[in-house]
Length: 258
Ligand SMILES: [Zn+2]
Image (cartoon, rainbow, N blue to C red; front, side):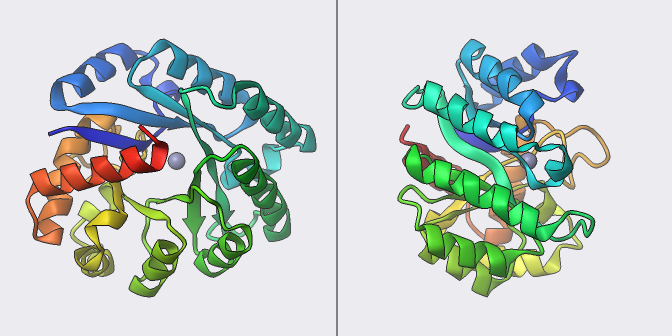
């Protein structure tokens, strides 16, 4: 099985003690590439350095809506300068993690929208895919994406929306990132939605260290768990794990131009 983890936070401190061992185990279980994402100004260099030093790691750079209150206007400008400086570099694969989070009510929505718009403009200007965090904000996200019409689209990470929302994203050329959350037995709506998704719209992810899958509950999630997540999701989709791994890897390769 050859797999791509399209969303992991391997640069986080959770992996400080054993990052190299995790990467080695990923190699052994067939997780051949992974995307590590920027979330705030202070991790952008760390993500970039990790991508440069590890052959299987690729970098997305962006400012995450959850850390909105930490983002200064100069951080947005710095991100643009950073993208300009490494534009076209094979280790730069996307703008992300960016988006809108309406679940956390203390995050100012107008300010979120401003930061999101600026970063989608960067994805357009540097011709990169966008990796999106979308919580309780599908309608506004879809409306925003319709305005931007990104040529290289992107991924709605940890997709947990409805069948109709899935259809809207797919129409916009976006892939839906599936991971551990859908493997939990109580995620009944997700199970129904996933079973109907066209295979060419799906990519796999762990969101590690978060979003532990049902088979590894309450422990640090890790990209090395992706083969087990793939098996569990394939069962829900009533296809073989081999078929899901092939399709999701092909989709990720096409999106990132690998
Ligand atoms: Zn994330």
